[in-house]
Image (tube, rainbow, N blue to C red):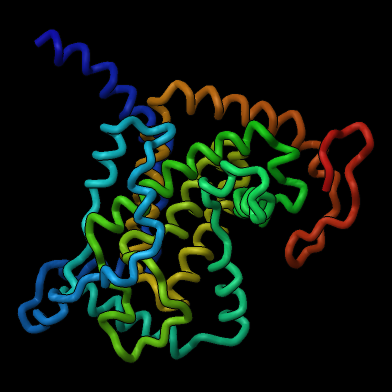
Length: 318
């Protein structure tokens, strides 16, 4: 009885955090797709014999040796085991493959150019262990991609070191979560199950869940804590990244929706971590101290390209 009473404050705190950080509903197209059964369909049983081929594993499997940064081992285990991919032979997977084929038919050269660029974006924690790494600065630039799309090029690791520290910790958790879930479930990529799918890239890790979508939404949620008034804009960037993986034909919609759910569960868990809350507090203070100066930058209306330096009294650079 005493143990249960001691757990009550933690339970109430968890409920309060979830109530304060309610998640937006699934995208409309996924609401339709998830209405189909996720269970095995004997009529397509051959599909359940297909797994992501072990010969195609890349170096990403080494992330399984890492430790989480803000998440406890228990939190990490609970979140990573809270999701399950639809069966390959399921009606939902078949409907998702049909949806991807429709996207392929409607794909335009402009879309292909944009999604190919988005496919090159991504922060890799191991790169920033070595300041002399040839991609060190580019990797830090990618770390701020979601916010740069909203605020402009003045949002950098150099200008916002406290925010950089917060994001780097979360991205370490993200990569570990991504590849733990992927290698637990070994879901084949859509092009492994649908020969008519002409994917724009071949990937060196299993499909479920989408790493691009996971980092995009986790960053969108964290930036929404730093600058709540731009939440809609951050989520719009994350949603574009989510869509890009489907347009490319390399992720099922359920890979992306699961990544969105995982990102939100990670955020909720973070609010039970003292270090995360301290780092978030420092990030918010840093943003509030510099956001006014940042807004004095002038933006090109098409892609937020900065063309004027900030006032001399600011330490920021555009």
